[in-house]
Amino acid sequence: MKQAQVFISYAGHDSFEASLLQFSIETLLAPQQVTAWTFQRDQSRSENEVARALKKSVQDSIATIFIVSPSTIDGGAAQWMELAYSDAFDVETFVLLHHLNYNDLKNKDRGVPPLLLASQCNSAMEWRKVVEDIRNLVKGAQS
Image (cartoon, rainbow, N blue to C red; front, side, top):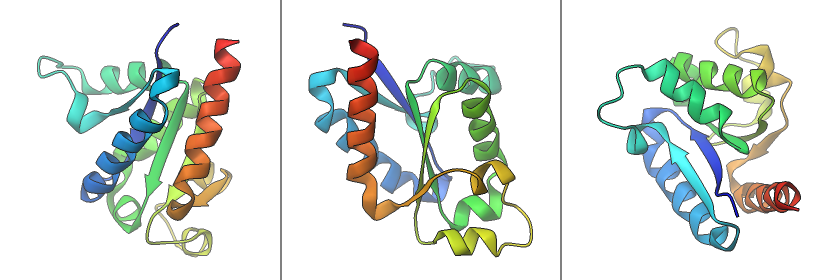
């Protein structure tokens, strides 16, 4: 059975939450051999081409989770590229809103890409549902 990968995108300020989500995904989806990849923790130290590494990681993933918080909105250019890669490679995308809601996104004057506004956004409190959706994705890919 091929190991499935999930890419987690987050602003640096949300690294603790991303680490908890990564641990939870890998624990809950261990029977399906799912690994969760985050850029800062898992980047190869010899990797010179950051953009290429991100693009490849997103492309190789069965799903991408975007943790979107006020920190993302304030300085999320890198995360927006990851969202664009996910869209370009047709990778299933899940958005978790952390410390904000969909109306907060819509009410921002700038800084929120239309692609994010068009996505299905979930409260970060619904992370278990997202994990179950990923489990179903993996099961479908493995059958």
